[in-house]
Length: 430
Figure 1 (spheres, rainbow, N blue to C red):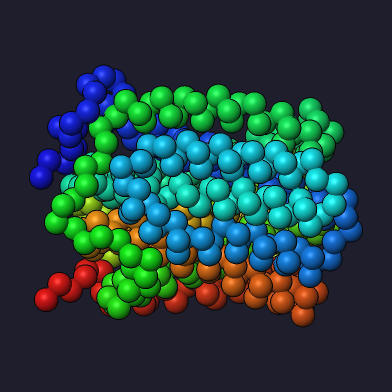
Figure 2: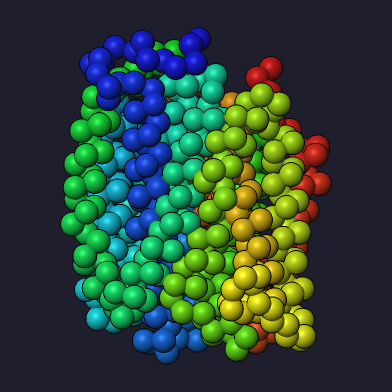
């Protein structure tokens, strides 16, 4: 089979070209994450506005992660049933994600704010199954790299979104996050229309007549294969650590006596969790296509776990050191520098490793069940995020310190490196 199924029937134009196809889906993915990731920068402002405690932050994280995570069980099935309409699902997913985020800025009370932001996450969850299915079916021999470009788009959104939003709030809008949600909706309408136009000119997915008809139970039935159990474990633990940090780290950075970061500083450090993965992700995917998936997954799990444990150890240090950058008068706290470098190092693998895991899942996907395969992967990922928010919230409440999230995140992620030295990565068909 050709590595780029551009020979599929359809209009021949630049919109049908492989690079345009990948770029549209990857950039759209990044913009979707830009809109959703803005909430991490809003969070300290919401906490201050409504005087929320750690319990309140935990409740917010649970609601948001559940709203965006549990529907993946159903979304994968919908994607498989509507495989001829994948080009419509993506722009609609983006539009409604932005719409609900805008409506959250109009809500006067905290729980409607969270409910509407969660609906934004629900709308966003309709993106991944069709998007990854589109890429893996059109580029069957290069799915690792194609999915990695898609992941790099999301990484760019997760990294640049909080950075840009934090800058806009801090320097232009006086931390008026509600005004930001209103101003950002108009571009979302234009982007949705452009995305629809580009995808409508590309070749459509042709139904596989030999594939079984999708059933609602398919995502769960896939777990009878050990490969999906191991991959679900990888996504669960990675998301436990990643999104547990995203739920509580912004408050830690803003309120810790030794840090006291403003919105720009919070956005910068949240963005670092994915920044380097934007560039490294496609290379990571390329090598996974060439040398296999195991080595990249093991390496990523090890680096993520150790990096978080280093941040935890630095956070517990009571010695305060400052130094001045050479040839400047800029003074930097040693603690801030180590946290910044460690987050950047973690970000090298944190986001891109998910793409390799998803490519592994698509390698083993039964015909006609690509959407269900993606659905179970993202259900496990967002289940980990929800459980991570609950457990990390409980740990913060028990210890009275936000530094504990790094100890817990590292302890959960690090063992995955050992597990994946031996975990099955292929589906047995016999």
